[in-house]
Length: 521
Image (cartoon, rainbow, N blue to C red; front, side, top):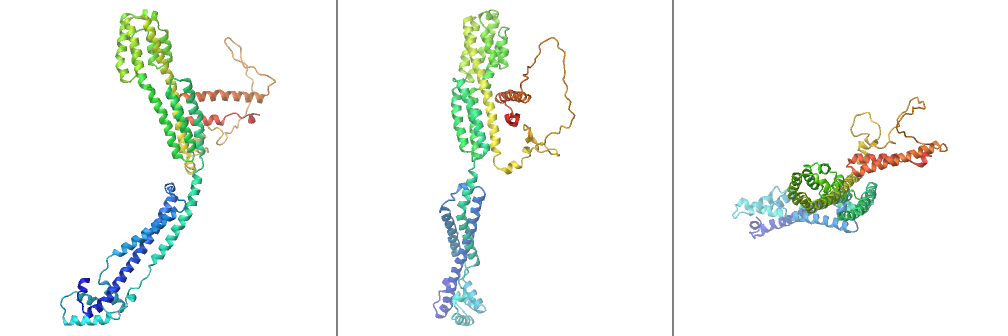
């Protein structure tokens, strides 16, 4: 249209088009100003929104909120929105007839200029149309483009300036806020500290003792060193529950790796197969029964008792049957990669078939050594499984260190009475006899001395020193009872896979009833 409008070079046409072209340019500049204002506003508001998300939604550790970096980041974000809005405003389409329409509306020309611009695009005009063009030219001489399209800043531009100021204010204040958050987060959580101390005393040191007692188990020495490093790592990450849980999981994986190397299940399966082979004769039935029950220490004792005289009580058919059954187990042992046990079993099978008392004695001694080794590994495995339960308990404690709100919502930690039925509320009092309301002991007490009749059989009695004060005797008895039962409880916790909740309950119970000399006095 512009080509058609400017194709005519008559002075009359130039008089119409020249002011309208200036109006058009001013319209384009105003569009750029409006686009810039929109981009400015949106970028500022978006920057504020992103800043608050990073500050209050826990993502502040992903961005460096210190120094001048954040201010520069805000500046470039706002500048990007500013420039993007200007580009969009520049390329926003504008109707070429809009300049004529704006001039007609401002000067109340009743569409004279708009009609003229449409007539200029025609190749031929009628006399009436030429008169219309002359009238439009007269009107165009009075047009002031600045009055038709004045430059003005939109109100949103001032809102964008305010939003930008807020963004920079947040950027300036945020480093102090993040430092405060980091200071709170840097507090070492007592649950993790206690877990590290517990694992140092009850995990690392115990496994070090196992490694010293069993120097042939090299994997225990490696496990001890690895766990020590992980406990140190746990102590260093006492401010971060998530990292602490990851470290505890690494400890569990290290212990499970050692348990898998022992191959307890496959070894037990091979021993049961050998037990079936030895069950055919009365002379080896005690060995067979001990192997079936996985009592390897007892089986080793029975094997050492078996000698040449014991073999003489066996018939040839029994010896051959034992040897033949043992040979059938060799392939399974080879598949399970039990080379030493396979070699010992094969040697014992040959001795039975050859009726060689000396070789049978050597074979039973070697097999007894394997049984003792397996019995020892079962004890180690049982202890390691107890350590896995201890790790699980530490993980549950560390997992509950996320905040006080989580604790306050856990009814299981409440020791108060409740009249409503619930499976969780009040369980916090379990193992904690000093918590909750005291039991009322409204009763009439009467002390009686009970006498008995002396009869036959053994009797137990305790001799008291009359010079000893009753309070001292009671305190001594209390301390002795506590030490005795506490030792029993610790032994059970070390040797049996007790559920986590019950383990914690037992430990809290004994801690709460520990005798205090000051209270006894």
